Amino acid sequence: MSNFQLEKIIFLAITAITFSPVNVLAQENTNFPLVSMEIRVVPEQAVCQLPDGYNSGTCPILSYEYVETLRGRSIKTQPIPPDQEVPLGDLFGLLGSYRNSLQAQKGLSLGQRKSALFVFDFGDPQQNKKPDFDITIEGTQKGRGCNDQDIPETKWSYSSGLSASSQYSIYHSRADVIIPCSSVTWILTAKDRATSKTYKWTFKTKR
Image 1 (cartoon, helix red, strand yellow):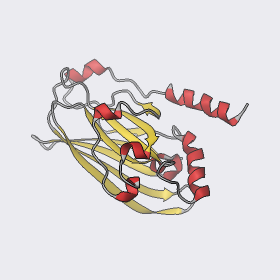
Image 2 (image 1 turned 60 degrees about the vertical axis):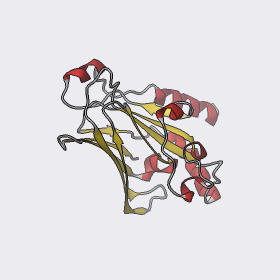
Image 3 (image 1 turned 180 degrees about the vertical axis):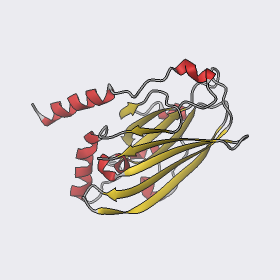
Image 4 (image 1 turned 135 degrees about the vertical axis):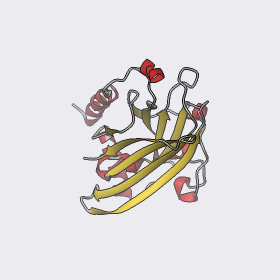
């Protein structure tokens, strides 16, 4: 069996994986949000349309309508209640070849680089009553890295808003931070603007 055939089998198995299901209709009867998540790997130049992508500065904000036109390998979860840890594990093991390219070429051109696109779905606002949220996504990288070397603790964050009439919160970053050996922990926080109550979801890329 060729490596290509093996990768295809692994990818089909990955895309079939779902986490413990939560009835979407139950969201109407809860006092907390349910969030489903999609991570999609796309060309960097498709989401950060600057002369040299992320290396050029702050990227434009993406609309969901535009994001829907992008194609790439992806994983999705079922709607998840807050205070849950979502283990991504080796779901992105197929990015191993991408990591090898990064190492072999000591950096790739914009046309070769990939981006990880995060789409958080808070549910159809026409079916689910929800407040206005302040959204924060934080990344923390710490532990043993892809070269089996200690990684100095590094943190970064991105903040945005989500109105009661909106459904999706979108974030994107370099694809190398979702390779399992990158040892990144992500925390999604939704803060109710009216009550200051916060809801959090944690997900990890780890060996």
